[in-house]
Image (cartoon, rainbow, N blue to C red; front, side, top):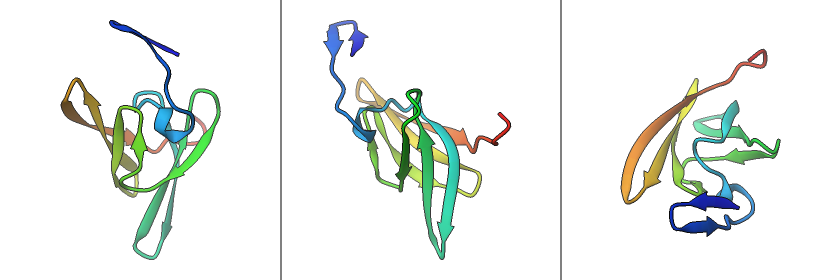
Length: 90
């Protein structure tokens, strides 16, 4: 559950319940011209995602060689957020 100004919100399970600020990019898979990203969550869940996949407060816009661009939506406004690929020693 998440506390907000208006009360408590139950987020859905799975990728759709994850916050854009909480996920970490741990890998990128490239096959021909397609790309997928590997995201890890604070509870150690792992998701393989592609452009267009929805999170609780945004979506995956683009997957690049070295990171992803998420669109974070809050109170109707959208903001692009870049997450760099996290090296295994970080």
